[in-house]
Structures are given as C-alpha cells and as structure tokens.
Image (tube, rainbow, N blue to C red):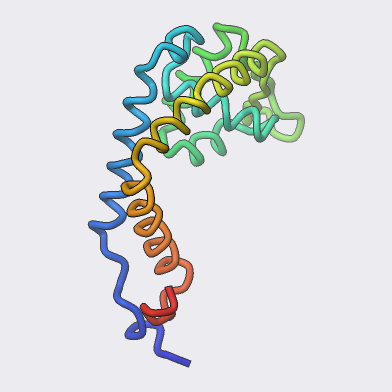
Length: 157
C-alpha cells in the first residue's frame, strides 16, 4: 500500500478557493434573476428554505452549520421566512432551548415554484458552456478525490 503522504500531490488550496469562488459567483448571479425577486426570496433565504424543506424539523444550530453562518444570521433568516409564512418555528420537546424549523405548505409551494423556474435557467447556462463544465467537473472530481482518497496515485484519478 502506498504511503498516504507521498502517493498523490496534496490538495491545493488554490483549487478549493477557485472552486468556492466560482460557485459563489454563479450563485450570486443566479440570485439576481427575476424568479428570485418574484418569489420574494434572496439567495440566503432560498438556501435556508431548501435545507428546511429537505430536513423538516431541523434545529437552528444544525441549519447554521449547514449554511456555514452564525446563529444570529440563522435567526435573521428564520425571522424573514416566518414573516412570509414560509416556515414555522417551535420549541423542541426534548430541549426548550432548541428551536425547530419546519416548512409550511406555502413555503413548499413557493420553493417548488422557484425551483421549477430555476432549473431550466441553470441547465441552459451550463449547456452554453460545456467545455467550461467539463473543466470544472474535472477540477471538482480531482479535488474531491484528493480529499476522500489522499493516498491514490494521480493516474488512478
């Protein structure tokens, strides 16, 4: 078995930074299109609502961890989503300090509507740049493989 420290080149911080910056630019541009404005959601609210929809009954701390934001920011997002009747917030039966978030029927409807409008736009944007997508896919795959299998030789990627 190859030595994990020498078999493959280390993960380059630049690769990860480029990946994160590219995704961030893409998502920022995406949040400026009309469907977001029509839904009355910003990128952060959409991200939070999507996670709450997928993990109904998630607590605020878990949501903060998944979004990579502070507890204060999650409280702001929760307040904004509650104000639009898209989520409800309840106190956990096990721990009164824990606030649980659940999506409402209106939140589900609005999220589904927004996602249905976004999907063709994303597919079209990616479809116009197949070469860039292939390059990005290769970079993502190589970077992720270095993370999960750091001992694999480069030719095995």
